[in-house]
Image (cartoon, rainbow, N blue to C red; front, side, top):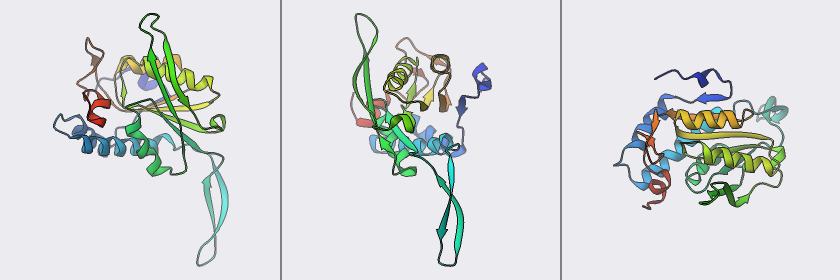
Length: 217
């Protein structure tokens, strides 16, 4: 793989675990059906979440085992919220919740106005205590980076202070935009594909993630 300049950015994380690479190969395959695609997206999201939460704060607790008291550590504070960017991000939520069942779930949806080309938020519902949580924003594809960057801006506008973005397939254009627009946000990706085509699809990519997740065209 080509070494990109953003590899040196401490906010950028390429999660290239062998299990992710294996599952991603099947995810890309045009023969993979909707059920398999959903399951694979969930599994990859779970593995990415493991990496994205390695720095969660811990507190000391005493736990009574059947033998005696054990001095342990548990995640402190209000922990995590997960926010899918509608609609494709919905396919990653269950993977996060498998690891963090008590995570609060929010949703954000936006579209670009055809006249002004400005992002318009059509739906945003976040946990009431978002400013006290790490919000993991999820979207399978990071192409131009425009939607992801706009979504993060809007989430910040609702009071969130700690945000991480997890995507499955990305390209340099989108990575650069998110890191430039949001230098305070950690970005996790499972793959970097080299280019976008004329329709702003990632190449080779995996097609339209939303259509493949939900069986639509």
